[in-house]
Image (spheres, rainbow, N blue to C red):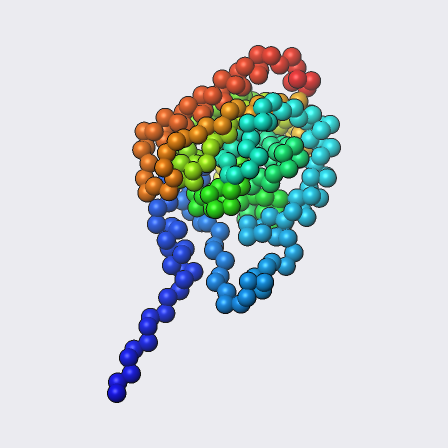
Length: 312
């Protein structure tokens, strides 16, 4: 009797990864398509207990132990250097996923750590920050970035964090256009890409929480940029800041003590069916522009009432 052929072997991991990449979102969080999502963990035939991770590093590389150390070190800067002051924290959900969207500034961004630290200490919720893959490629800095909650900005990463894990995720739709602004253009929001962050929120079925940040623009203002050095170092821009002119090389990592004020705007519920293959491009762009306008109006209102860059 002829033996029947063996059934084909199916690589479940490869199939799951291919399925996750079939419908990538365009221009999500103003990053290039060259970024790839974190790979799915391999399927294991061992008992469930054997899959428990040793240590506290999660699938994204975040370590609560490292975050606790970072919070201890950073807290004096947050409280006494930037003197961060929040308004509207009740608008951030205490559970479930939410996409946090804010304006972006400073040659070396000072707003991301302030927002992540503030939400973690004030609300006791972890925050994952999406950013360009550049940080991950830097020796030592890349590892520390991952351990403190940094994740490569890719729509599939954002979806898994928001939908599957119900986490808070922070994005800056202006990207490098925001941090690369000259001081003369401070608090004038750049274009929010093609609205990829809105489509991510629609697909994941989570609200968008806008935050207007005042103070970051003055913490490390750019006076001019060197295109030649940027090309040589393969960077989006190479800034010459007021900090380096005043403090010399130390100014590369030294912020001015600008007073930070952060206003959390009411969450935006998009009221669309999640997990759809496509969403209306006009609706996505309309919501993106509406959110950008809300943050811009809030910034102008906060600046009108600000008495001093240093004292608020």
